[in-house]
Image (cartoon, rainbow, N blue to C red; front, top):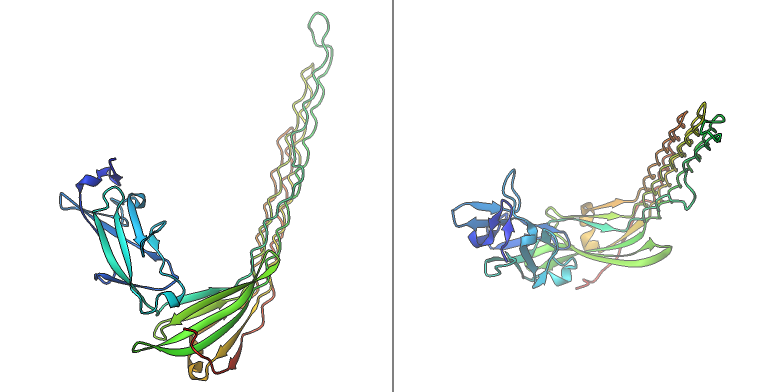
Length: 351
């Protein structure tokens, strides 16, 4: 098989491959649980290079490359280090990128964790359902009847008028956003090697499909540059459905004189956006030796944004054009959740 890269370059012209490391080293330090994009450079027989990312020329298609992290194939344009710090602390992994049809052309980097990262714990409410109704929509009016004819083929009378098109139905109302979740955040300081890090355990529940479901997240945070946002905002309201178009008026029947075409039907009103869901709440349980680390945390507990309204439907065509439908009403912002609370309690490391 002949591999084609961007610029119609055959893979047999490739002499080398390199993962472009930000630190220009053989070790790549990445944040656990946060997607890490990659850039790959190909070296060509003529001394030129091609990149997966560049400005204006010579992109290499990602489908022509294999990405393997910890021996597992990755989809897309990068990889993600395991989010649970218990799987990454004091551990080194291998990242390998190779040509798909020439696996001997590859590059390998060591991957180690870093913890000066901006993390986010997602306990937000569900987005409301899109407004949709299983109802009839506006349709074209019926054509007018043809006039009768005499035996000699001449018209006997006037053609019938076409019927007006039916009005379009209104758009469905968006569903309300879901309530924000509950999050209990346990915070303590630990020593990892010669570095003091903040160990965080988040236990809580999120409302999904009408049931509260448990959700647990774990983090290690470097206080020099790291942070964690606990997001318990209400869900965004659902988008209102657009109003349906009015039907076109029917054609007038043939005759002498011909019948009048029917008027177009009125467009349906756009559906209202759903209201945003109420915010949830977060409570912090902090080891007395880690109270100072609370400045690394941010809690988002606002109500969800209201859903956008649907546009009005278009009026139908005809002798007289149908009126367009009015747009719906945007949804209201949900009520904010209560501010977070803090309790001091002696804690033991969870790993």
